Image (cartoon, rainbow, N blue to C red; front, side):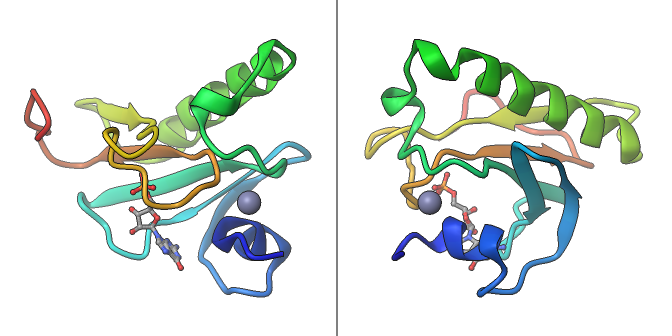
Length: 112
Ligand code: 5GP
Ligand code: ZN
């Protein structure tokens, strides 16, 4: 298994766990871009949102719901952002689908 996030989920690479359930695992980003910067990843290895199929729709909803639940557990009264970088132009650097949950400061728009 060569996937970085599969290794993190499996525990062979350490991470700061924030939340986990039967379908997903959430942990702190190693290079935070905001006071709160977490990654929510499915336990299933899916390369990116572009590779997710109709069968994955319930899982995608679960991931979004988990991100919202985690955000509720953080102190983010002014809001937050959920980002899914997808593919080369989308700025994806790890080939295992993941949601970024960013918050704790005003986030500029549009992104770079
Ligand atoms: P992407 O650029 O693919 O959207 O996001 C990948 C994220 O994974 C980046 O924000 C990067 O900081 C984070 N990351 C890369 N390697 C590690 C690691 O070993 N541990 C953790 N916790 N995060 C990582
Ligand atoms: Zn993986």
